[in-house]
Image (cartoon, rainbow over all chains, first blue to last red; front, side, top):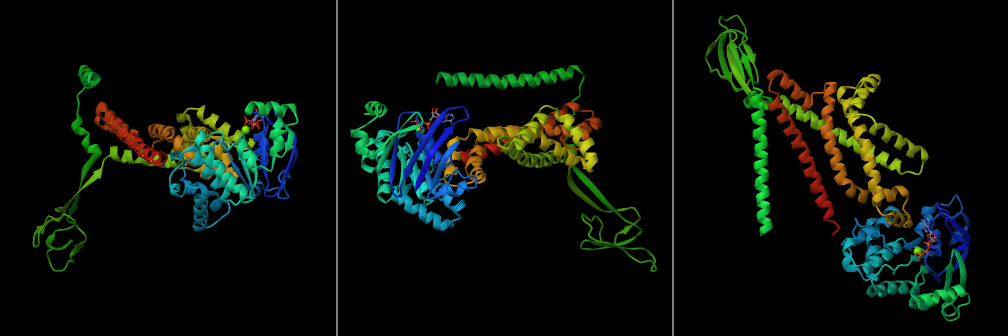
Length: 241
Length: 316
Ligand SMILES: Nc1ncnc2c1ncn2[C@@H]1O[C@H](COP(=O)(O)OP(=O)(O)OP(=O)(O)O)[C@@H](O)[C@H]1O
Ligand SMILES: [Mg+2]
């Protein structure tokens, strides 16, 4: 479903955030990305829907090349949902409007249909009673669940999560992770940057460990956590445990 | 309790202070032998316009409804019919002579101060409208990645902000106005909108840049194009934040519009000058003109405050 080969990203300030990273995600697979701060986790994730332009390498989503100059990037982004650490809900729109905006204005869905889709998704993330409030009135966990519903409303083939729970108070982490687990169970293809080990063990098919812009290890959760091979991963695990 | 009493003291002090300033102004005008003639002013605000209808010839009057018929003496001459006459003051059978008053029409008309105020309002409304269009487009060009648009915007903004408005008005009227055969009003409105547009562009730019960049990323990640994301996500949020500085700019525009009087547009300021010339009461006239500008500007800031309240009620 996702294939990235030798992706290189150099920021305008000269920082080489990705030094040739390759990864592959099969349909319905869940890939978790871990690594210390500044290792390039966000950068590789954001490269997967071209929020960051890459300097070298190739990325394809469902067979379509992102890096090809003729690609209609908006079209591909419709199929790749993204959830951010800081939610990024639209504060001037109600919960319902946040969810229906892209289906109506991008997919040209009929308004009644979009509202139906949104209501179904709100039920799914357990926020049906919040459809007409503004994001500012919601807790962090609720906002993040709305953000997930908003991304799902475009019926994406792939969902990207960049540390979706690290801006949340501990008591709200569970409700967001539950929604993500549910999604994984339904067979959504997902790439998740997270340090939630419980989630990774339960849901991930594979984990990749990144450091200094490179992929250091890639393996099943059991192997990564119980049998780390590289010194860097051992050090990293000892720090987060 | 104590602080309340202190506040009361300072409030009373403020009133006393303002009253003494007023008294001071009055006293100094005494010193220069100024005679205040406030009673001359009202006629420049509204005045009673009297129109008389006079008899075109001698004869006997017959009135029916709004029609007056004057039958001249002697049977050979034809009667004269006057239609749609208001305020008829003669009765059936009266004998009138040529030049007699048949009807007196009284109506209230706007004096030069109010017509000037209306012209100022008209210029301001048009200029604000065009300045917003120019300002938003330039602001967007200013943050565009296209070097042509970006540099053009910077050039325009620097050019306008680096030259005096008065000079710009002259250039618009004498140079551009002559080439394109523009009327004074058009030239004046153009000068003011182009001038204010440059300032609004900077306000718009700052407003857009104050919206967190995660908003644009979220919108783009949902498949929205740059334009759609701008229109639906960024600009509405930027708009709310730019309201206070925008209001300040519009108030400046209303005040700056007084400069168009130099190209003979009879706005509030020009009316003021004309009235001073005929009444020799500069103090009263200019105080009144100032008060009328104040009415316009306070009205505007009141409206903007209402709008702001309405918008901030949304996200609590
Ligand atoms: N917009 C940017 N401009 C310049 N350098 C950047 C930018 N974003 C990230 N970087 C740099 O690129 C490197 C990788 O950053 P990235 O955000 O991908 O790390 P990360 O693994 O997501 O870290 P974290 O766990 O802190 O989120 C870092 O050295 C960072 O300083
Ligand atoms: Mg990150």
